[in-house]
Length: 302
Figure 1 (cartoon, rainbow, N blue to C red):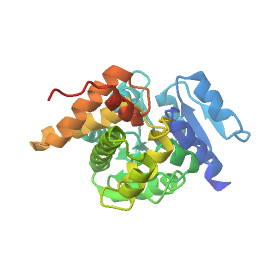
Figure 2: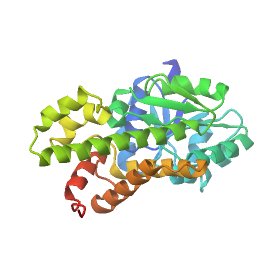
Figure 3: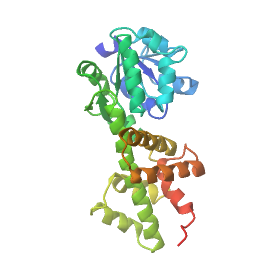
Figure 4: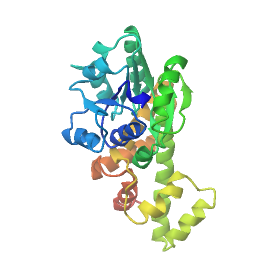
């Protein structure tokens, strides 16, 4: 296929990155990838067509072959290491290069790295996603996209192979800001739903009927619609998004509150509760285990 003629760089084959890379392969892309995990590299190679995947030892090695490089990394610290660390992308960037950060990064850091890339004639965009592992597997992610018009237009065909047409959010850094604020709103809705379920349970109410009432009424949100019956009431807790990553996104939202000088007490409450939950349950459990955490907390003194 024509798309396979020019390889696409892909760095980060974790829980989200691996299915996103596989989605690109299904669309006929050839990938030059980089990830320290041998298991992740083997998983990407498995089932791929002949010559569809090859690996570079360093991020710089990816940029030496691919003009467009997608990053799917856990946080800004990891992005900075990949871009600026030993063997990093920055030293290999040249005019015409396009770097697309599809993780959830700090907006201020994204703007800083974009400026560093621009000094070398390259473009750096932010394109975080929403939808979790299931939509990453299906190639149906919601994607936000921040940056100038010309590089965004170049990135869109690639992004459409991993999800819906991207929503343009404005200048570079705006997409990461909107993603963090979106996840705060989700976390607040999930917290309210989990607390309400715990109270309904204590009253002896039918929790399935209560969920139906929420979803037919003004309390409806994405957590009540897609998570309560399948994952919370069953104790399955398998939404595919880690508790620690939710805490990280809430901290990013907190950095935005600090940057803007806005007092956000609801956000402060969510940050405190998620920090406590991560301390008690660990960062790798599913974010829906906030419901289990609430059940384990000591009852507040009356």
